[in-house]
Amino acid sequence: MRRLILTALATVGALAVWAAVFLAGTLEGWWRRPLAPPGDAAAFMSAAARLADAERPGALSLLLIEGGRPTGEHHLSLGAPVDRDTLFQVASLSKWVTALGVMTLAEGGRIDLDAPVDTYLKRWRLPPGDFDNRGVTVRRLLSHTAGLTDGLGYAGFEPGQPLQPLPESLARAADASPGRDGYVRVGQTPGEAWRYSGGGYTLLQLLIEDVTGETFEAYMQRAVLQPLGMARSTFVTPAEGVENLAGFYGEGGKPATHYRFTAAAAAALYTSAADMARLIQAHLPGPDGAAPGRGVLSPSTLAEMRRPHARQMGADFWGLGLILYAPNGAGGHIVGHDGNNEPAINTAARFDPASGDGIVVLESGAPLLATRLAGEWVFWRTGKVDTFLLLMEARRTATILAAGAVLILLAGVILGWRMRPRQAAA
Image (tube, rainbow, N blue to C red; front, side):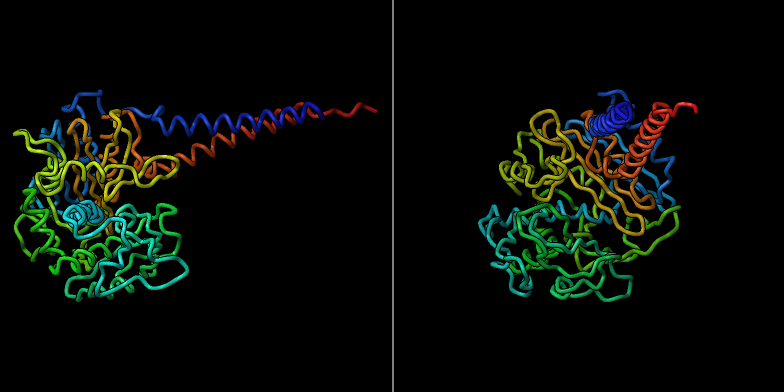
């Protein structure tokens, strides 16, 4: 019996060691190889282009940035040609740009990031509930820590279908993504934990309009997009037949519906790889001595946006409108944002504020290709595994972990069977 107990304890210990080593190795990238040798940008670009070609999206624009300057690009299209100036609808990547607009209001003294958002709203307010709405501040909306539990996700409206008015969308979004009820409400204690909320950014869209008296698009053009030189970018759906608009594709390259959105701030920026490169450049010192922010925001405000405001799984995860993907080795993080929407829109932008290196990937027709390419860039650049790459591979990681655990258990059972007490022959 003593041997069986020792065998059981050894099996449990082996399981714990296996789980600890495997998970640590996964988080630290011990089992991964970068797409190219560290520091070899040309080799990385070639490898990324091969990966994109193999995936065969409907349309793709990939731009590599070194020291704040675009140094490589790769474009694909099943339809009209795509280049660095082609407009893509970029889904939740829109939130990064929206956050810049909100921060211009804060820097200009028109809002207080730590005041209840209801202070500034005129056409709609958060419904009363079990939690204190006064804890829903602008800062917490920007960092997804405001306690909103909508989980939106907007599926959008088909061509010819009228857009829902903004206050009505906040009351209950008619185009809520599958599995969501569309209600924007406070469902947990504000400030307690991170929880993704597309509805929170729709609320920020209303905030911008109610504070400025302008349409969301008009203010964003005047205060952010035009001053940063993002001349092609817009939050308004381009007219049919507009020049150099990427096609919309589902998986396998099948043409897909071009959906439109009431929740433009959360899901409906149209931008190009070149304009996204200009956005990244605006976060860096200019070659002519221009300060980061280019007069739209101050360097200190940009730094505040990059400061950690939320944690997940024990790691810094979110700033103000920015995702913190991995430590950059210089006391900060690789930052940016991703976008993903049906049928197969996926976009990603990452950059390192310390070096000015970055990547932009805009595509449709492959559900997670942009996120994968950007995650591979983070690992190649830092040796750290991108948070979103970990999430993408979570199922595979769980499968390998479970398979190893089963083998250890089988080994324990076999060893225990062989070591069982044997009855003496009669």
